[in-house]
Length: 114
Length: 115
Picture 1: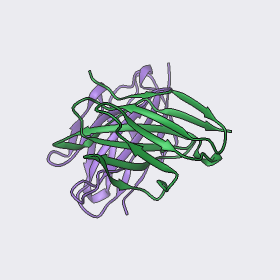
Picture 2 (picture 1 turned 90 degrees about the vertical axis):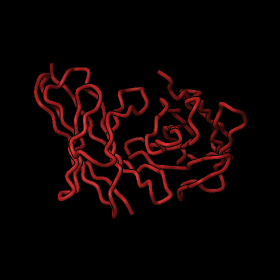
Picture 3 (picture 1 turned 90 degrees about the horizontal axis):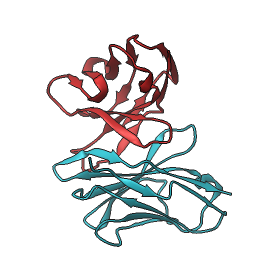
């Protein structure tokens, strides 16, 4: 069964550094998402992406964040200058045309900012 | 704005016992409702979903959920719990149809299973 994959599984970085989290969505899916879960808190929506542009973003997704689909398979989340409060589990998800609401999630990348 | 409440943070049941996890939502129109499960170190796996029609929906791993509009609830049930069901369970609501596909999650309910 096809699944969403994410790399790395765990990323440790220093405050102020740039990080790129990578995701490979399910191959025939056209809608892509990033969510995050701060330890002990609920999963929160960050951004959705369709047709090579952001379709929706939350208040969390400020100018420090960006997303990109650099090729036909990868979907990335970049944080330009990490803060301590960016430490969280980041989940990528994807869904397909005609069944957009059914989102399939990857295993997550745990980001630790020191 | 839509929201989801899962009133139980942690539930412990004995293996073989029945299970009900509560979920209440707030949404202006007919919601799209989901239950996801997260095992330790794993991602979120979709258990089941409700879009419309029959209010009792069946999912994977023997789970089912019932949509009750009058109570704004979408409780998850399983008649006989297995030790492998120990995980965290998240209820979520989607707002498709309003041009938005983001999911809003509850805080989750952690399920422990006693052998």
